Length: 217
Ligand SMILES: Cc1cc2nc3c(=O)[nH]c(=O)nc-3n(C[C@H](O)[C@H](O)[C@H](O)COP(=O)(O)O)c2cc1C
Image 1 (cartoon, rainbow, N blue to C red):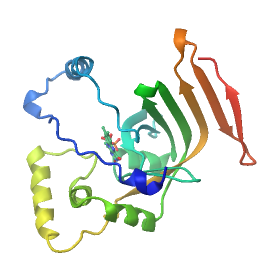
Image 2 (cartoon, protein in one colour; image 1 turned 180 degrees about the vertical axis):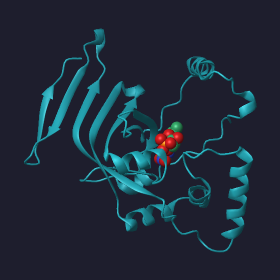
Image 3 (tube, helix red, strand yellow; image 1 turned 60 degrees about the vertical axis):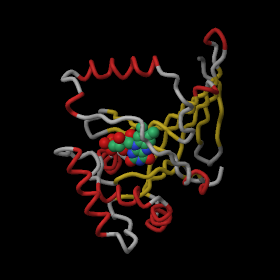
């Protein structure tokens, strides 16, 4: 899988919105609505490069969210985000993370644990500059993870940016770029009958080689 192929995997999300007036006060009610929708709706295949990224804050509270794998090389797994987002702040304090890939149609899961480092500015520039203009402006428009007064504020900011960059390409914002997760443990899970699944756990050794053991399902 080449980095270029991964970097170009991109879906446009057009299906629905989530506005305050339609959101119940109790988040558990909203969870129930969305869960019922999920059960009732035939799920399309997940984006194969989507992965759940877990980070930890200074109080030891884990946080997880979906991000997209945009590069893969001998050093590790690259994703892009806002460096001042909640996850960015957590990674600055505690540069460790876990990733989970889940491919339901294949009944497979991969869990990866390791350390996280920022990629070089040149690498981030290269990826930023190949994104569609809307995504590049979106990186400027969104102060990711900060409270937002309304959806209109975000759309207004984007409209202003579209004007500002009508004739020149936007540069990459300094607060936006890539991280590389360098794996130390990788566990491959293959679903099998009677819940007797296969789990192969790889652990990086001090000499750079990987040890491997089978874990009970
Ligand atoms: C399918 C999917 C793909 C996503 N890809 C990314 C991504 O590549 N980078 C990113 O910053 N957020 C991505 N998000 C949004 C994150 O899940 C999350 O909302 C955002 O990064 C803010 O997280 P934080 O507040 O913990 O920093 C994606 C969400 C979904 C559902």
